[in-house]
Image (cartoon, rainbow, N blue to C red; front, top):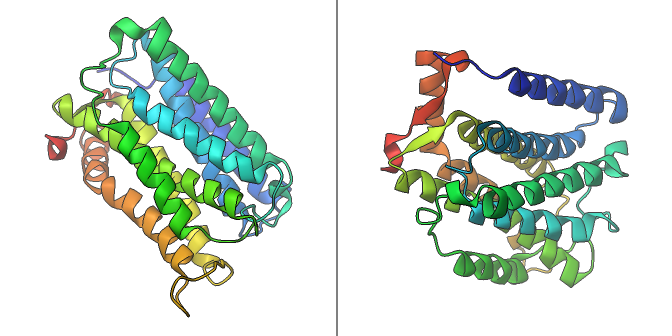
Length: 270
């Protein structure tokens, strides 16, 4: 039986320690810090994928299309949060920390894309990473243009923020597609990546539910806040997409233990 590499355990420890410090000392226990914790978990998920890529010397099981969409999602979000306050947490973490974490995530995504598409291209499963991406991206931007909120009071940047959310949700589809094409077998750190991303979305979804009465838009139908439904629906869709994976992930942990979890068989995707 293989065990979890020390580097992975250290990474988990550092991120969780950092999360606790951010919540208690930077945000002073403010509920809005949950939004910052969600981007920290996203950064952790991407970091775990980078550790897998570096330690194994292989890009097998990693979807470059998912990484491209994740990177585009971060760029869209940063186009708003770097200079506008509409979608930032109201505590102290919204001043700089939130944006710094997103920039770190974007840097790791760039590192991963370099390794998958260049350094380790011979191990990249391009024939399995075949889900059509342009239609997904176009759909996300069209939906964002129609359903965006107006928290920035700038239609272009409100649209970009919403597109970032939709792209982040859709980014899971190429990865799950690749898993299905690989007969449902997922490497350990890829499974951790998917699971931690779900935790990130659960945290941000909790914040958005709590803030649903503060989210505003220019309604298409009088009295109906379509932006709230779009934001909450996107979070629910992400969790729904990962529902079957979560079952097999938890089942594998309980049956084999996290210390010997070198792969997961997700029969639901086959």
